[in-house]
Image (tube, rainbow, N blue to C red; front, side, top):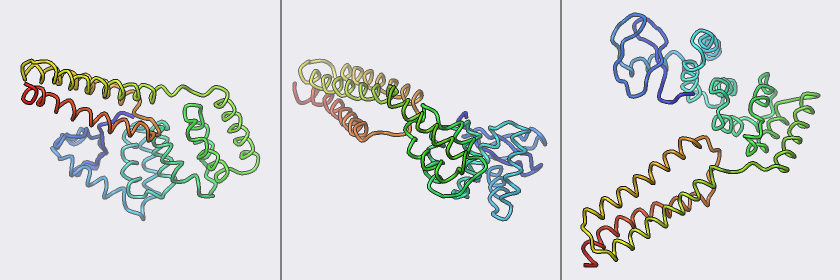
Length: 267
């Protein structure tokens, strides 16, 4: 689901609107009146966060999907979900309209898998979510199957879970995202510290040091940004990665210190 949008309702004609984030003012495409994004968002919250009308609003959101596609209803569901975090149907609809986004899937399972309550959409969650790509969530899927399915359906999903678990154990997926980020942090730390030492040894202009340091940092930020865009839906960040991230940030401070120390102290 593309980021950068939110939902609103025109205060003049009550038309549902998809709002681009950061846009303060807009013209309603139906009534052509000038409105503010804040007004549109406030009207949507007023309409959709009334507990007495929750079931009616869910039905309205499903109709909106047929009319507009999933993006606008998805943004409305995010608002409803924030107001009713314990409503499993709302959480499922948001998950479904996100095309079973991995992060929302993990959130949904973490919040609801432990509650023993059969739901009509359990098969849909398992069919779309229980894939080798989401192998990290297998314990949550097992809990979900135990608490949300019954009888022959339960047996079928348990058997499929065992087959998937055996397949993953036999051919464990490569953790490319973590391997790349580990390599990036280690390489960047080495480069930053090496540059700081080099600045102390050489006798160059302060401005040359600044340019070299900025080029190195910009290159590192580009690599980090590219990795984040490609692997933004990672389900976990290990403690080792967090430690390397802290060391990397410290190396930036060392690099900046090397610029000044190499210019003013070691001359």
